Structure formats: C-alpha cells, structure tokens
Image (cartoon, rainbow, N blue to C red):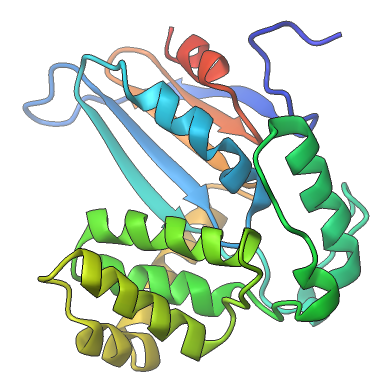
Length: 236
C-alpha cells in the first residue's frame, strides 16, 4: 500500500537532485520546470490536481513548460514499462489514466485516427510561446482537450492551425498568421529542438516530469501523475 502523499500513478518517482543555487537578487520563491507533451495522457489527467496545487501558493511561483517530445514516430517508439509499441496499445494506457484520476478521456482515437507523431503539436506549442508563454499554456490545454475529449488528430497541421484561430478569438493580440509562419518555418522547430536537448541533457524520459527548485533546498525531480497533496508535500 502506498502512503497517502505518494503519486497515485505506479510510475510516479520522487528524487532529490542537488542543492538549488540562488539566482542574483533572488531571495525566495519556487521555480518549476514542467516537462510534458500534448500527447501525454497523465498530464491531462493531472491538470485539475496541478491547478488545485497552484491556487493556494502564497510565495512567488515561476513555471517553465518544456515540450519533451513523447512520440517521434511509431517507428522510433517503444515504451517497455507499459508494453506500448503500436497505436492500439496506447488506448489501454489512456484508460488507466482515466481510471486513476477520474478525469474524462476518450481513447477511441487510437483505433479510428491515431496520431503518428507528437512533434507537430510540440512545435505548435513553441510557435505560440514565441508570442506569449501564457498563451502557449492555454493552447497546450486546448490541444489536449481536442485530442483526449474530442478525438481530433493533433498531428494534423489543419487541426493545429484551426485551434490557433480559436486561441486568437480568446486573445485578440495573438497573431495566427505569424503562428502559422513559425509553425511551418524555422522558428517553431528550432525552439522545440532546444526543449528536446534540455530534456535529454537532464535525463528526462518519463512524463510529466517536474523539476522543483527553491533557494536553499535540494532540487527535486517528480515524475508521473501527482496529486495536489503529493505536490504540496514535495514543497515541504
């Protein structure tokens, strides 16, 4: 039996890394680097817990979202831990995430129209982030909703552009034409490449993964589904 403050996901890991260096002028606060992917069902399942965790924090909190590239292609993907090597096997993992979290997830897309890669969606998030990190979080969540609730294939450029148009309706200063230029040009893929290299350098290979830094305390790496309670415990 797991202690109550442990992640519900059996893949969840908690590990200390090293003491956190203090940035110039920094006296307190928390910085979290959140490695994820629009295709990550555990991030979607955890999102309500993540929002609940963030609401009561009364000290400065900075979150950096990194797109870590879950699925390059099915020719280059094998999850030995969960026995996933082809699209239809991903559905059982999504069903597991739904059962653990209670969050709605529709896994039919892995039968009807499976995404062949998560890289286009990752590039799309970074293309939004070029204009606004805050809008990128909104867009990321809309990608996950489109995929996991509405069963839209977010590997499709037309879907990515359509959702960017909806983002522009919500945020009038967001430029969907510049987004499309960055998505199909060099800037979006370049920014995504930086995230991939950072995740590789940090040895991040399970998602979601959160690196928590706080001045004067050990840096902590959490991987897998977390509850708001387990996140709060990690801060202590």
